[in-house]
Image (cartoon, rainbow over all chains, first blue to last red; front, side, top):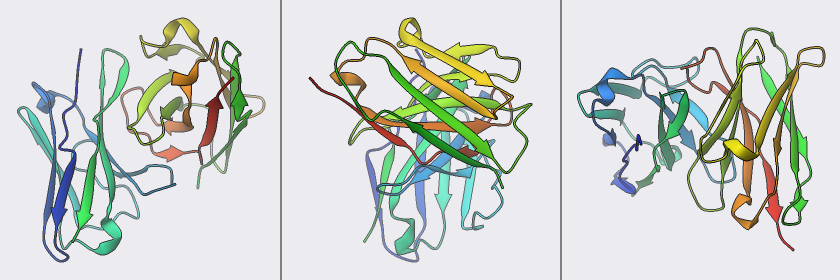
Amino acid sequence: SYVLTQSPSVSVAPGQTARLTCGESDIGRKSVHWYQQKPGQAPVLVIHYDGDRPSGIPDRFSGSNSGNTATLTISRVEAGDEADYYCQVWDNDRGIFGGGTKLIVL
Amino acid sequence: QVQLQQWGAGLLKPSETMSLTCAVYGGSFTGYHWSWIRQPPGKGLEWIGEVSPSGGTKYNPSLKSRVTTLIDTSKNQFSLKLTSVAAADTAVYYCAMSYDSTGSFDYWGQGTLVSVSS
């Protein structure tokens, strides 16, 4: 079965760049979507179709996808970016989420 | 701006049937795909299933035998039924909208905590 692998946590200082990865064999052949979830809130779409930003999402958020790894990059990290981030794809008519990465802003 | 508002019973006993409804406001209802996603306390997201504009359905194989999703275009609503619930079904349940069958979940409901306990 298709399993998306995300690191449990990533720590970064304010103003620095965070790179969150989502891995699976040949994920580059699929469209990857990324969601941000803050405690007690519903997830929010921050990147879809590998690297497109929905309206209202700051340009500090970007995405890429190639080979076996998709990456969500958050530039100039702010305290408000601290959250859980989930990647998601479709495989054989089934929606699949990664286990999530907790972004910790030091 | 599309808004999804969901409701349903929050406390169930084992073996009962869970029923949730999601209403869509502020946008077109037809032509989009409507999903249900859940999140057990302290854990990650799990896709449950989807109903398409035509009423066709797709389900997570792990839940398929217990899940039904329906669409009511006359009310701009869609629903989820999960039979024979157990403690492992305790989770926050979200409804969500996609523009197509392999797209992102662009809009989400506020979530409903469903607890299963005897």
